Amino acid sequence: MRLFNTYGPRMKPDDGRVVSNFVSQALAHADLTIYGDGSQTRSFCYVSDIIDALVAMMATNEDVTGPINLGSQDEISVSELANRVIQLTGGDAKVRYEGLPQDDPTQRQPDIALAMQELDWKPTVPLQEGLRTTVDWFQKLGNG
Image (cartoon, rainbow, N blue to C red):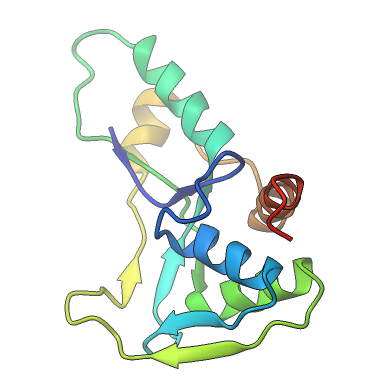
């Protein structure tokens, strides 16, 4: 199994992932840091969808091998992700742009065809719903 950009409750606020970074920064009323111009795209898969896929994989025959990519096929730009987080957290955070790391891909989207075929799986939690749950969890932690 190869997991792509999983997010949701129980993420560590300082784990360095873009969702947790943006939510933590927004709840602290700090600037959201975007590396590059924000046009690079990512796809995000809610944790419960990933767990469903992992359970489905455990129930397969031993002839099902991978790697099987798990993630969402819905792409979003990093700038749009930042805007959604800002809206969900009250809308007063700003965006700050920094240089793009040399090895940062401009697009990251998994091909989940094998997961759909072998596991009869695809993500079901919409990004906006998952982000709302994630923001709520971070707020309960006292990060906002």
